[in-house]
Image (cartoon, rainbow, N blue to C red; front, side):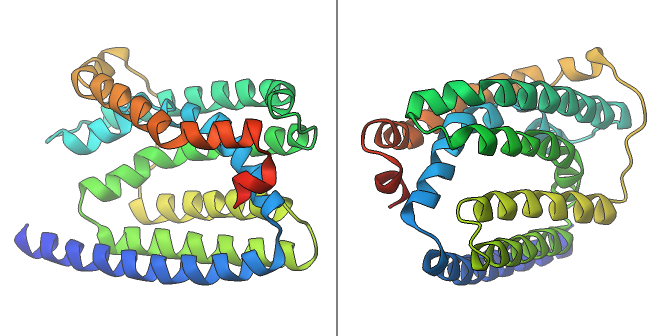
Amino acid sequence: FKKNTLSGISWSAGSQVIRLILNLAITSVLARLLLPEDYGLIGMITVATGFLMVLRDFGFGAALVQKKEVEEIEYVSVFWLNVIMGVVLAVVVFLSAPLIASFYNEPQLIPVTKFMSIGFILNSLIVVPNNILYKNIQFKNLFVVDISSLLIGGVVGIIFAYYDWAYWSLVAQSIATQLVTLVVVFYLSKWKPSFQFSGKALAGFRSFSLPLIADSSINYWVRNLDNLLIGKYLGKAELGY
C-alpha cells in the first residue's frame, strides 16, 4: 500500500505539471486564433449549466471513493443513477436553450447549448470507472486518461479554430475531451456495468453525499455568480476577457 501510494503521488504530481504546461500551450494557441467573444459565448453556457453538472450524481461518485469496501451492486447502481441523471439533465439543458439565450440576449447560444447538452450524458458515463481508478490508487492510468484527453481535445479545438469555426472550436474541444476520456477510462479501468440496480445499495451513501452536494452547490455559486452577472450585464466580450 505504501509503495502504491508513493507511486500514485509521483504520477499525480507529474500529471499536474504536464497538464499545466499543455493547458498553457493549448490556450496560448487558441487565444491567438479566437476572439474574446468566442470565449464569452461558451462561458455564458458553462456558467448557466455548470450548476447542473454539480448535481449530476448527487455526490455518490465521491462516496464510492470514500467508502472502504464497495460491492459491485453499489458501483453498478451509482453508474445507472448517473446515466439516468445525465439523460434527464441533457434533456433539461436542450429544452432550456432558448431560455438561456433569452437571458443573455444572445440568439447564437441556442444551437450551441443544445449541442453541448451531450456533455451531460458523456460525463455521466465517466464518473464510476474514473472513481474506480482513484479508489484503487491507479494514478498512472489516471495520468494517461488526463493527458490523452487534454492533448487530443486541445488538438481538435486548435484544428477547428484554424479553419475559422470560431466558438464552435471550444465546443469541439470540450466534446472531444469527454469522448477520449470516456473511451480511455473504460479501457484502463477494465470495468463493465451489468444491468442491475438497487435503491437500497445507494441508501448508505446519503450521509456522505448530501452534505457534499450542499457544499459543492454553495461553492459553485460563490465562484461563478460574478461570471453570470458579467455575462448578463456587460456582454460576451467582457466575460471572455
